[in-house]
Length: 164
Image 1 (cartoon, rainbow, N blue to C red):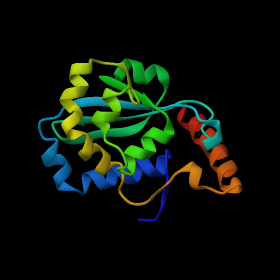
Image 2: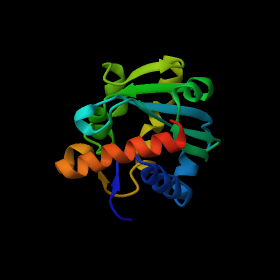
Image 3: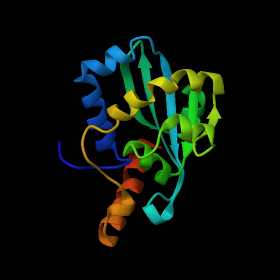
């Protein structure tokens, strides 16, 4: 796999392929049925001018969907919506911090769903993170000024196309 830019349709597509081709994920999540969504808070210096929401729908370990969602669709469909800055999500995806610790100290906030339910999913956070890191991710703070402007334009384009 080549390098994927964080928070793009290509990243979610590669992550879904990685999930489906890795039996360990289905085995470790065999008892999990959830619709867990993640808000990446706006960070204009990263080319993310508005919040972005993506979510994973898992039914007894099977990945049913991994996609970007509009605010309305996320609120209607999600069991959980968790929010953090892109810098915080980067630390998690790079395994420089742990989900449970960041959640407990408020670096990751729960916008929808029960705190008890999230704590029940917390032991599976590593599996979700592994699925979302199928290879090397390039984050906006690692892009040149030119790459960042292209990235910003690309985000605006795919969001308009997907209506998210």
